[in-house]
Length: 455
Image (cartoon, rainbow, N blue to C red; front, side, top):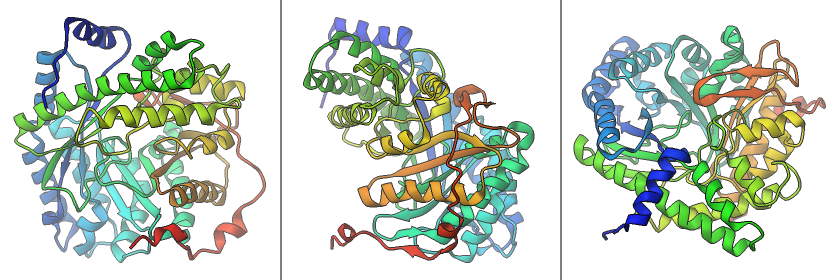
């Protein structure tokens, strides 16, 4: 189906790029690494490095060429790979950090920003390889620059693996300890999922699922600033008009992503996977999801009405996006990463936006508790309980939820964690002091909900 644009629409798109922070947030090349398996980590690592360098060598030059020719900013070029717990399953070595080092070296060689997939899927139980990989996460993230890790601890079909939830609280604490000289930066590259998806192009949770092709190009678009500017024309209008305006804007944004994805696919000779139409904010002023919610009439993001406003935004973004592309996937909707959104940073600093309110918002957005700094002395059991709460929201609502927590060493509520770049800065947020230790210590598996029985 062709899509013809008149002169006004072309000028409007140029204005979106020049003035409203519209960009393609990432081109992510997914690479299958199952054929790199070997009985030694050294041999497996060599195969991983060689295959990534061979298949991804043209990714960055191709992205840069598309940027120049089409005038569309492409902020990141990234890689996702098969969950490393599967790739390393044949390794006799107890330590899989060597595989992360190979991923990092290959990512540096081909010039990508990040590589995701140091991952394990344990929503129903552990394999021996899963255990080895999870134990390796703290060192892997401390000793690499570009590697991202994720662990899926629950799903609507299987329930929640509470043994894994308990362990991940300890893993997050250890990762923070090993990167204490960087304010616990390693934790910004670690995501704990419920209902993880196989085609997510966004970091830190991207991995290349086993249901994917040998390679695939997935594109993540953005554009909170574009939506914010569009809503300025809706002052005082009913929510029907607000939703319609967001839908039309999301359509235009997604069409741009579709164009870039198709072009990258053709030039790389790799199948086009999906467009993820998530609104991904940045710390830059005017590129904030919080400001969109405030444009709907909220004095400050986090006050009463915020969850309803976010529900309107998320639904309208999805409806507009699916009309623009036949292959919408990933997470697709609105992200609420505190450290990456200048409006949310401001709301958290003044105390209106709290972790409890953010948890409520995750019931209607596209991901979860993202990039939240908490006091460094927060017990591992409290971190695990936060993971469990978020996984329960995902499990019951049949949606993807994720958590990135940064227990900042030596920091207390009210301090700031300086992360830099797209990750911005995170105000350290208060957590409840009452213990969850006995709850977390029960272990076992929280059963799947009744509506999981769909066969």
